[in-house]
Length: 244
Image (cartoon, rainbow, N blue to C red; front, side, top):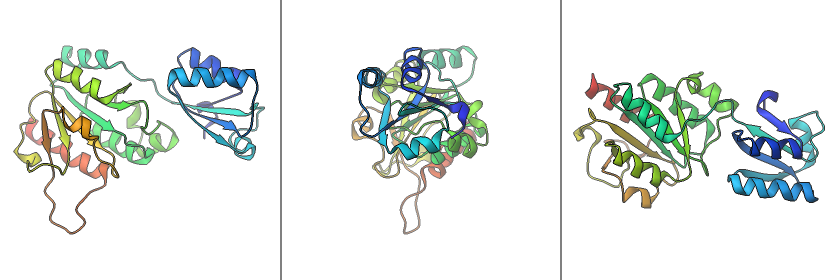
């Protein structure tokens, strides 16, 4: 973990959260207690921040500084507001192409997807705050730096983001094998948001119920599935092909 991407000390972490810093996760020493720790738990709960209890040895490996039993990782990038992302894209005259990631939790997959998104001209990536991969060193490295070029938006609930996009005239398409429709049969030369789900669970069924279209990639082998970053690339490049 790079030192510039961490905060150590309970009070410092509380202040960072209250100041609106993008805190990805907090590591807390097992069996630690006290009033200050109670305050930290309260602000983490309000901000919906992930945390885990770890042995003090892990905290000592994360930082040589006096951590007081808590170390937080912070994002190396800033995040954009959904409304601003959509409005600025439309105002620029660009035909919107957004990517929505539902519960993709692996940082390397996330980084690979960001790299492909940058190469295909995606206007922005939308992820849910809870359950999504953090933007950390692995993400930055796997993205080959693309993470600094593609706007990323964190939302409380994917469904609310989809409703907002639909209300803004953007067609939402879910990548899922639970359909007979092929991606190559869809019209993608329109304002579009493509939704990709996690490899183990796919897209949440409640999300599938509200999208405009569902599409799959043709599969001819015996495995029956692709790595999510590879599948994402296939969907995005079909959009590029149609638009160019």
